[in-house]
Image (cartoon, rainbow, N blue to C red; front, side, top):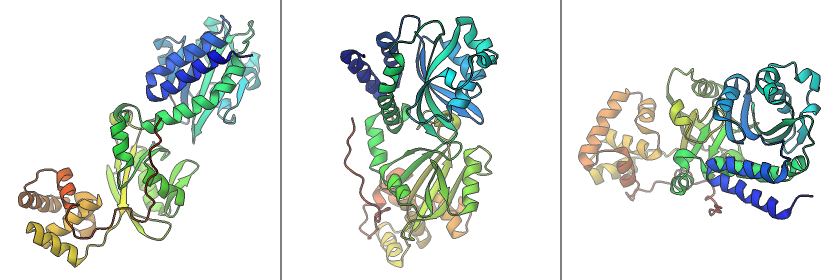
Length: 387
């Protein structure tokens, strides 16, 4: 039987790790310290991808940094525990002998070149989460001549808490999004904000984007990946996410469930920045921002011309900026060059006395010319229940 006080301590450490990712090492150390026999002193939680092989450590105990680097470089997504474990059901906890015969395992490179020197022939394996080709598991290797005691039972009981904590951590963001204020700004945005991984897997969606995805229409999720009803745009996004796109950004229309039009802008995220945003194994590859398309009426153009003494072309560009599509979207829609759009933008800056788009858009939104909300047809986000 597990001691309740020790179990509560480990659970508390796990949820602390949801807010401070570096705390995962402490949570795993506590789990091993309380529930494993002395001979079982190694545990790690890792995201792995099978094709192409890749991985990222969430936390570990008893694993030297050099061993972590060696595992990621040579074995992640390639050894039998990972390959066969990928098919485990969420929440399952098994002994590695249930996945591969011990004799066969000892013939693998993973055993001969990594675990063998420590005498680790056996492991307790738990499936924590899965997203497309990626899975997150907990691995506790140990010697075959020692009973693991209460450790399998403890892992089974702790898995739901590890799963929730990992998902909380992913939603908060880590790194650039670790500050609660940054997360709140994204979640309260009037626009859809979506982060996608290299295979278009969903890594993060603010509340408005999640509502849009849940409702379906021309933009939805299929097995955890973004799916559009326009094959050409789907192909362009896939190529951009994989790093093979001809352009670093595109603007496109997506149909909502009620046949409205959503104007979406997709931007390829550099690898160095993507690793610090919403994290899958490969980091964020694409950022999508979208708002409901606003018709450019003559009344709107006239109101902007009157308020800021803009030309008709400058006023039309201003409405595109408010929509979130930017100069590139304006140029594409109007059939002009991006340089022409930048020329018009300089004129708007000169007449408004501003010097950057953030300030300009904030001011334009205050002009009483009757814009609808960018996502007026979607429900307001629910109140925050942040832990």
